[in-house]
Amino acid sequence: MGVTGSLKPKNGPKTSFEITVFDPEREFTNVSNMPGARVTFRHVVESNAGITNLAVTVEVAGPLGWLWRRIIGPGLAASAQEGLDTLVAQGESQTI
Image (cartoon, rainbow, N blue to C red; front, side, top):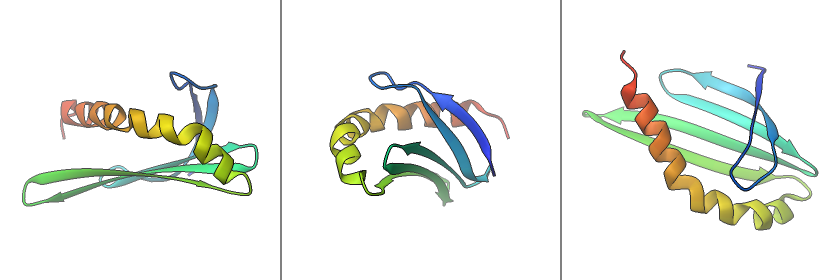
């Protein structure tokens, strides 16, 4: 995909990201590079029998991935539900 942007987490430094997968009906994946690690956020929407599920997975990989998981992991886990709720609200406000 190659689309890039930046974001500023509440308790973290500004970071850039690249969207590597985008399927407007099903998935988007963005990747951020950190010193010695790569953080991948994958968002997948699945609908079945009128019920929609949103799953988000986060992978921290690389030689310093273990360190970054210790540093940013607790914050990611703590903010995950709020982020999902915001994403769902935005999706539900869209008309198709």
